[in-house]
Amino acid sequence: MLNLIFLGPPGAGKGTQAHRLAARFNIPQLSTGDILRKAVADGTPLGKQAKGLMDAGKLVPDELVNGIVEEALQDKAAQRGFLLDGFPRTVAQATAFDEMLARLGRRIDFVICLQVPVETLVARLSGRATCPVCQTPYHPLSNPPKRPGICDNDGAALIVRPDDAPDRVRQRLAEFENKTAVLSGYYKARGLLRGVDGVGSPDEVEGRILAVLRDRVTQGPANP
Image (cartoon, rainbow, N blue to C red; front, side, top):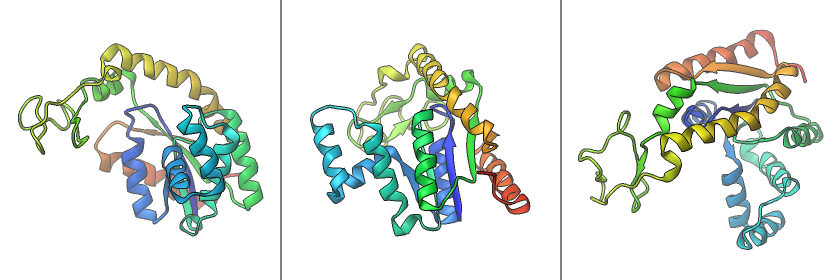
């Protein structure tokens, strides 16, 4: 059983690495958005509550999100382990999550935090363009379209979202750092946090993460 949490700023590569590790270890990759959408689609009691709030344009409170996460962890697919991507986001959520895991007789092995310099993140995030038709993302450095400004799939004109302008990217990164620094400290104090260099190819970054996970095999699970 392998239970992981992924932390890291936008553009750090969390989604890519979470997808790779989930497939490698045959455990579900769980994000708050995916969990909420599934609960709503399945029509669970908590999902119906969440749908009512979402339809009304209201935020889903922590208590309800935590309950939906607990439902997901009791699903058969999560019995071999899980990888949480984007949850918890606050110390309050983390504390409630610890209590939840204790009830379920489970615990976190590691909290993997991908570390990438700010300017590298700005370069990765700035200038991203998306097809408004098929939603395919492009980037002038890592994934440029064959014709500038045009989607390879359907010929639609690509759009750059305001959030992907360099100044806005820096603002988003500063906001993330302010909110998550305390959360990182929470897990560091418990001996669970592992910083991983997120610069390099996906294979290189995955190799560094796997080296951290091998420590679990040789040293045993982290302390609760």
